[in-house]
Image (cartoon, rainbow, N blue to C red):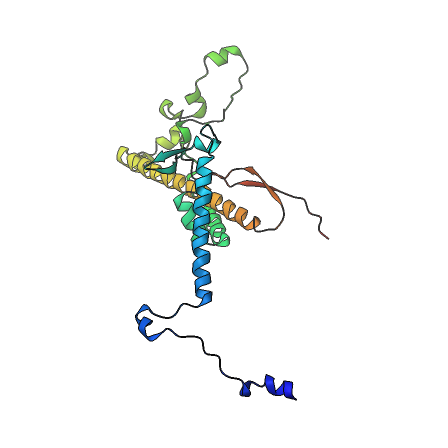
Length: 255
């Protein structure tokens, strides 16, 4: 029981640490051993660092060389790395903006809509006057070489010589003899139609470019989605503004 009595907290005196004497109050709180220990450790750490650096400077080899020296130079007492050649950006600013704000499903939806509009425009224009000449050839067969020499294409097609090279809407002589048709095909009207046709082709070209850009963005987003997989991968081709990066994934057997 006596040992238990000695262990009782109620019978023990409260421990009071020594306080700062009255005549030293102006110096602040009295430093305890734990505070001194922290201050001393910090001081010795700094002293050891200085000694290590001094030793390293004394033992340095003046003929030492490492490859990083080629790409760095001393400027105002500090080592600065030389800037290399600026590489072509992998992602353009426009692509980065779309990729960070839109989802892959939205981009794919817009691309499909753009492709449908392109098909509709191509169907309405029929690629009229493309390259000013027809790419395919129309072969006419005759019975003898004499007929080849005297062969007249305008006569054979029943049209005027001025319209022989025309790719589209090649009217016959009978059609041109109609006054209403001739009245409709006036110089001013032809100029207006030609201007409208050029505008439509420009519009089609812009749509095709936009569809290509959306396709590239969609591919890049799909690549980033595939990279979230934990499988091992090897980079085969670097990413460019016009094409996504190509990765080769480790084949994994699915159960």
